[in-house]
Length: 160
Length: 289
Image (cartoon, each protein chain N blue to C red):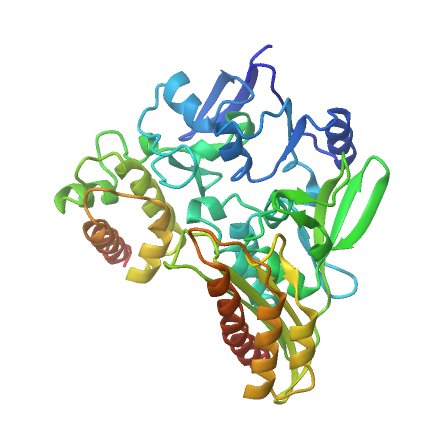
């Protein structure tokens, strides 16, 4: 059967791609568009390594059909930095070693960015619940949570 | 999986037409948080996926002329949470829906999908049953309204006829000093499946409970409406004796399974414990409202 022709926007860029009706957004990002920053951990929406935003809402790209992107706007980890300039969350994760193997990191960063856009001053509890769907098997979460809270404080300071 | 098709119709008639024409080979796609997992696991192999999110009626949250709410079956928990007044009127319905999965899952998962997936442990359904919500379904033979508790018929099974699509939930107008709550027992705080779930909806007149509905999840093949528990609460001051009676009615209604999440004895006992805790929260909210 003919592939579907999808017109969408990815990281602000008008994008077209062909996909099979059963392919997930994650499949197309990684295998078709070469955007391998989003990771496949579980493929069942449990680990959050494939986190992207769909019209600014945080979702698992493994639980979304690529065909559903038609007419919508996707943002991925590849759109987070401004060229060579890292996003403050990325910079903070590096400075505070809030990652070890790095597989969960793109998803954590996309999820944390979505949180700070919605709530610039989250409590530790709010950060932990928001990130409950981003599993990390290395760091034990404390460094991740602290990095998000410190970035939030930095961004609030910069905004004043 | 090569012969699969995807359609995203913009009208309900088109959606029902496509769904019915596929004669059981089609699956409805709302948030996809169950369907895509089931497809990946090989549990379902649909020939046609009908994405219903472009149908306006399935994606709206609106006030009814009577003063209640109508929620489209495909509305996600995250969208419902952002509604300015829904969560103030029905905090228990909202907290049930937003206990499902992670932030990412809540961005997609809908109460409609939760109901049609037919899990006895579906977290959003006891709240809707306690609310007295009515499900509107539409199929090739037209539209009908049924109480939410009559939709699930067993694990993974519903009373929807072939070709019927769940359209919306209608929640009744709320008298003053009414509120609701949902609690579930899980061994952790997040990202788990209910061992027992309990929703209570109350109307209070001072310290006296004047109306109640009680629903339990994960203790029987379907989510249950527990009328005996509600009767034990109505026209009482929610005193210990009344709560004991309502808790006993909840335990008596249980028909659970033994599994890795909990034993029959444990679930039966916890159903009564949760009834008391949930009632206390709902009553506190109702008195405040």
